[in-house]
Image (cartoon, rainbow, N blue to C red; front, side):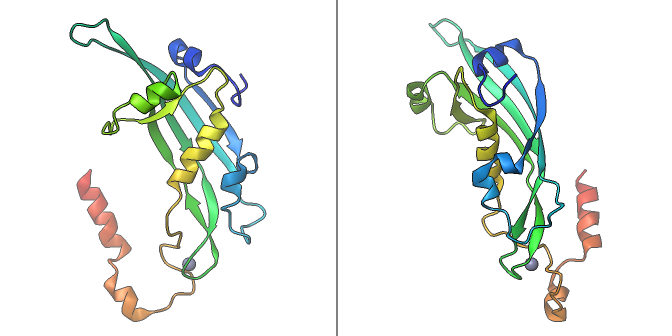
Length: 176
Ligand SMILES: [Zn+2]
């Protein structure tokens, strides 16, 4: 299947999962965000998987309405320039999203805006999944890219204010 141009509606109705990889170099808008001094040997592959779902919704006085969804997961990372120390660092860009697929622009415009369950996209019989993955990765980019701790940041006063990594770990463990 050519994931640059396939029938998204047929894919959703078939209900079969799909997966693959896409290279950063195939996503020019995302590639433009990469730090100039990113390591030459950095992994620039993003793994993705996708699964369609059809929901039948009975509405009072009307025939059942079908709503189409796509669950999309993307895993990978990009090297960004830290805004604090200006060095490149590796930023994981995980995406796990549910998209509601509309049949037309008009249907998308009519969709309720307060539906937090899923973002709305317009489907197509020539759907470009790679462009959609790029859109999702761009949305996942941090507003202010920076190291958690910059490598040459030696400011003892500031270090003391931060919780120790062990305290953070302990918190994570108790939440599970
Ligand atoms: Zn930094």
